Image 1 (cartoon, rainbow, N blue to C red):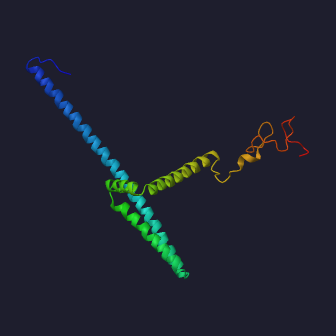
Image 2: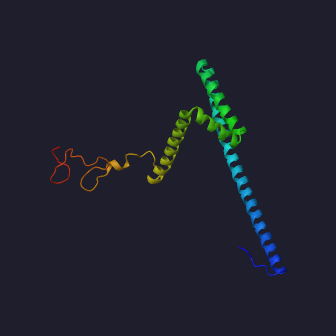
Image 3: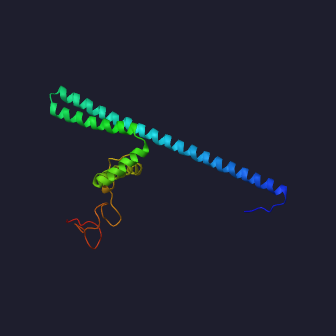
Length: 182
């Protein structure tokens, strides 16, 4: 949008508009930079928490190895310690690597071993689905997630036991109910 030049007053107005525009642009850049920093900080905190939890798992495997050694199970204890060492390496990687390094490593792994990446993605998807399913079933069943047979004891209209479908096992075709002779 060009403003008509009305002499020296028009030049001053244009300059004010430029200054306001520059201030708005600078403020927007600053706000975007602050949001990016906060998001990066939140992701880094989550990464550290995940590394700590994975480190705790490694500690549990070490304790299991010690217990197995006390029970004279050296071979299995060695396996537990070996697995604990690998889990500790994953935790240390999460603590030390930044997101750009992790993205590069995942990209390289996807190129070199796509089956591993697809398998891991599938496993994460299955775990996420189970997590989401367990949350919804506990809400639906009044926090009784273990009661999976709750609907099988009720009779639906027409005489079919819930969950058994419309099979004609022992049913009288005339009444729609169960035949006493069956």
